[in-house]
Structure formats: structure tokens, C-alpha cells
Image (cartoon, rainbow, N blue to C red; front, side, top):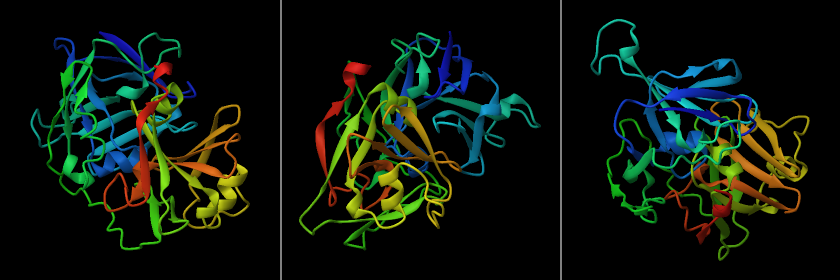
Length: 312
């Protein structure tokens, strides 16, 4: 079966073919820190495909490990494609295609084609397991997504090799936000010892294509909890003349009137959403928080509902 995938802004797109195995193919939800810090989400969903038909000229490439390269749109930041070098893991010697595996981000697959899809493909993939759950320290969203559709989703708790642990949370009054390449990094201050930020999950089309993940998780942070230059940046929706350390690679994209999304132009991590209608509040990507556990529950009060389901 041949399918298409594209980024949020429609600039970057690919056509790909599934491996010749019966449908639905088994799929997993990955909770490792590399996925979280390169996407800004609490988990990701990527599955193997055959070598895609793609023009990579509109993509940016980021080598997040020695063998693993991700490709994201240079204009809107959507992750679309992953390339894994499997030399030495089996297959033939040399530089053949047997030594490269390609993976598609399921959140950007377009069933209808022409940029009109909702990022969902019925009957193609079936989620069967969570992987690298121990990397989250607190289980992340794995313990809340134990059943998807009509299927139970089992847990696999191992931590991948060279997967760094989440932050220690030693700074009681400040929480660090940092992307994978660390080019984007800034602290968030707690407004008072008893206060918590509001956390929400969203499955709307824009959030899915922006983060390349079926469910995006956001923490609503008042700009008063951000120090300069973050406060100035997220209040104005435009780059100050000099951002200084921690923001030099930040790139913005207006996804709809009054909605500005930002991402790291080096590693592609989704960073924040600023809405004109929500003055003084920034939606910060929860996957970038460096807390004791990825849900950062000492800082965040999470809602139980998932918004935007009517959009999918």
C-alpha cells in the first residue's frame, strides 16, 4: 500500500510504501528521551517503511545519535522522516540499502492526500506496546494509554542505550526547559510554592502535524514566570534584536491567524505555541521539561481530557 505524508505547512511531503506484511501492522509508542527532546512531546510514534520517494531539499537533517538522523520541515518544523544506519546489525556488508532503515512519523500521514488529511489512517497500524517507559521516571502517558481502540497496549520498560535520565529537579523554584541539541534552553519560575501550572493534551490536526505525534501535551505558563529574553519573546511573538544564549536557534511559524508556533531550527524540537487570544500565557511543549518525571507533577496539574478529538 502506498501512502503520503506531509508537514503542517505542506512544504515538505513524501510518498512511501509499507513493508509487505499483513495489515494492520503493529505499531509502538516510544517514550525515550531522544524522541521526547527532539519532538517536544511525551511520546512519539514512528514505524518502518520502504525507502521513500522524497525530495529532501525542503527538510533539515539532524543527527541525534551516531546512527539516527531525523528530517523535519525547514519552514514549520514538522518531523516527517527518520533514517537509521543499521550497519553491523545484520544484512550485507558495504553501502547497500540493506544497511539503512527508514521510519515515518505516524502523526503526519495523510490518508486523503492533497493536504486534506487528519493525520490518521484507519486499518493500517495497530498500537500494541509502549517502549522505553522506564526512561520517563514516572511512566509518562503510558499508564494512561493502556488501551487504544479495541486493543490493549502492553508496556516494555527497558531504557535504551545512552539514554540520559530526566532532570533531578534539585532547583525547587526553577524548572529547566531544554531541547535535544540544547540550543534552546530557559528556566521557568514557579509563581508560588503552592501553585501549579495547567497541563493539557491536544489531538487537533494542527498540533498533530506540528509535533508529528497523535497527542501533543502542553503546559500553560504565564509569561510572568519567564525571565528575559523569554518573557519578551513570547509576549511579542517576534524575535527581539538579540535573543542571547538559549534562543539563537528559535524559529517561528504562523500556523493560523493569531497562532504562532516555535521550534528549534537545529534539532526540530517543538518549543511553544503563542495565541493572540491568550494574552500573557505561553503553551510550552511538555516534552522539553527536565523534571523528576516527564509529567513534572510537582509543577503541573494535568487535565484528564484530550482536546481536539472532534478535529480528528
